[in-house]
Image (cartoon, rainbow, N blue to C red; front, side):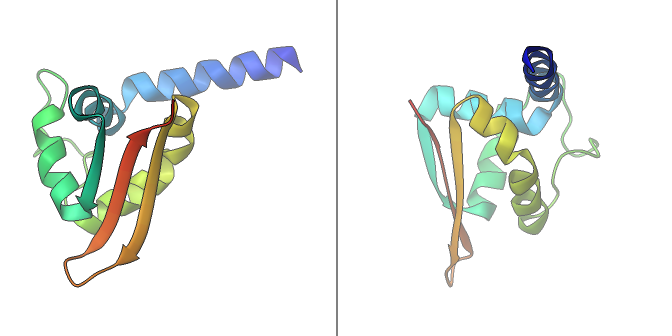
Length: 105
């Protein structure tokens, strides 16, 4: 069982290192501590925190609209929880779906 847990942790770490969305979220949280707003606001903000040399307009893994970002956040939530980052996609408002991202320390 120990071997299984080590392999699982290693695969999660590799996924974190290779995912530009996770890297952008980590960089944003390093500066601001948390984010609370709509998914569209988050998408616009994360564009400024992409890793060096990454062109989000050409990267097929980068979400192109708020719906794609919501789906991506749901997909990467387990990896984010592994590094103590909590993502909550809350109810829809007239402005759009609200999201809260913060460190769980």
